[in-house]
Length: 452
Image (cartoon, rainbow, N blue to C red; front, side, top):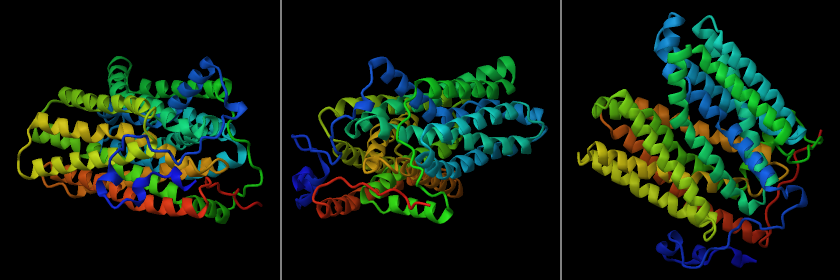
């Protein structure tokens, strides 16, 4: 059974540890027969994946769609754009804390009931945002909107683990990544059109309509997923214990943190790119939009190439090579910035390469993080999402604090994220191997949380 791990784990050559061998590596993901309840027709499979993608993208759409309306919102509410920007902060706070709330609820009451409550809250908060009388009310309603949106985001990841065979999870996450990555392309354009044609209020009404659509699809088309476990306790001590149990699993903390740190390079780019492109390279707002879309297309394309690679290579192999390539792109970006070797197009190219790796890293690290769990998939999904957003918030703050009028803060933070992520992966793989050997090659499964 120990041979399920690739031989490079015990080989002294760094190159053998890093690169793909000719023969595909056997994955540590269990390949148990597909349970009868997860076998579905093609049409049911399509609607299931579509619904999961819609739920996963709600947070991104809720952020990207209203950005073009900032000046109009500030003007109508008699405040500044900087004040309205706090509504993004409140949204991130809500979506980070909310995931930790919904995780235990999804495990105790099943996947759908908490989602119904969350989506209804999302719709109500979206309508409240549309008719808010003051900026402070908008900031508060955005907090509630985030608390509603994150119910679907956490549940979608857990349902991938529930519904599909574990060895297919990375492929499903790649499909969800396609929907999520469309947000920075479609949402700002749609939001700009809605603001110009119907006013900024219409943006939140459209978001409310998206919430209603998601609610209907969840009710009529989405499988129920994991059976509710009424024995789980919702007492704070037991909830914290449940999160700690998840966090102690080597496969979870290795791939959750490696994936979260790697994706934080994306947050650093989002925080620093407006200054780099519009202030340093003097591109227009419209040109910046095209740059943003071009880079997002790279991420979309990579996520779909990932589904092809998964037919030949394991998620572990793809993750290892992907994070190394991200390191190379990050180092090149820092070196080029430091020695003033980069122009506009070379900067765009290196960022495109750097962020395209996320199309490979996100699906595979997500699948590998959740693989050890079935009973606790909701808790694991919530913790993974909270870690990702928490580290992402730190990187955005670092880019802002280190701003020195050059592109170096953005480039340095992106590069640091890549190197740290790859380092976590290399050290974490040893812990995974040891844990795997101690269990005689059997998949790790957590016990249910402490009962009431």
